[in-house]
Amino acid sequence: MDLIFFKISIVLYLGAAVGYLLFLLVSTGNRAELGFWSALAGFLCHSLSILHRAIFSGFFPLATPFDVLSFFAWVVVGLFLLMRYRDPSPIFGSVAVPMALVLMLFGSTLSYQIKAPIVPVLKSWWLPIHVILAVAGNGVFALMAIGGLMYVVQERLIKTKRIGRMHRLLPSLETLDMINRRGLTLGFFLLTLGIISGALWAGSIWGFYWSWDPKETWSLITWFAYAAMVHQRVALGWRGRRAALLAMMGFALVIFTFVGVSLLLGGHHSFTGSTYSIGTRGT
Image (cartoon, rainbow, N blue to C red):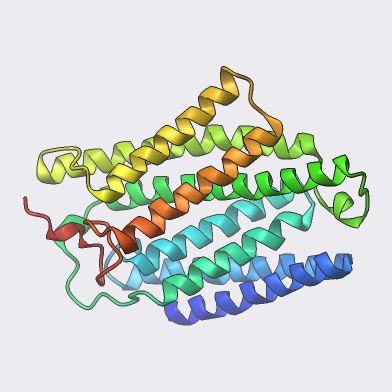
C-alpha cells in the first residue's frame, strides 16, 4: 500500500510541476493554484506512504536509499509548503516540486524492498535521529539554493532594467537575502547535529566516533564549507549576490556528498545494496 501512495504522490507532484511550468509561461493565478493544490495532495499521499511503511514494514523507513531519497523529497516539499504561507509567491514551487520529483524518481530506481533481514546496526533509534537531522538540513540548503538562483536572476533583471513579468513573479532581493540568512543558520545547525549524532551512533556501536569513511569525510568537508559561509556572513558581512552564489555552490556540494559519494566512492553509506552497507563493517 505504501508503494501505491508513493506512485500516486509522484503523479501528483508531476501535475504540480506542470501546473507551475504553465504558470511561468502564462502567468495566471489558476495555474499556480493548480500547482499548489496538486503539490499539497502529493505531499499528503507522500506522508501516508512514509507512515504506512513505518507501521507495517517492521523498521523505521530510513534504512534504504529509496527511503532516504523519498524522505529528502518529502522534506523539500514540506519546507516549500511552509514557506508558501509566509510568502504567497508561488515561484518557489516551480523549482522545489520538480526537484522533489527528480529525487523520488531517482530513488524509485534503487532498492525498494529489503531483500534480507535488516542488519542489527540499523535497528537503533540513532537511525531516525541521525538521518532526520541530516536530511532536514539538506532540505533547508535546497531552499537556500533555490533562493540563491532567484536572487541572481532577479538582480540581473534589475541591472539590465528588464522590469517585466518575471521580475514581478520573483520575490524582492531583500526577501531572498533574508531566506539565505535564516536558512544558513538553521541548515548549519541541523547539519552540525546530524554529524554529531552520526558520530555518537558510531561510537555506541563500534567504540570509535570517526572512521574517515568517504561519506563521513565529505560530510565534514560540507560542514567546513557552510561554516565558512556562516563566518563570511556574520564576520565579513557577505550578503547579496556573493551569498546567493555560495548557497548554490554549497548545495552542489551537498548533492555530491548525499548522492554522488554514495554511488561513486562506496563506503558503508553506499547505495549498492538493499540497505546501507553500514552493517557490514566489523565491530
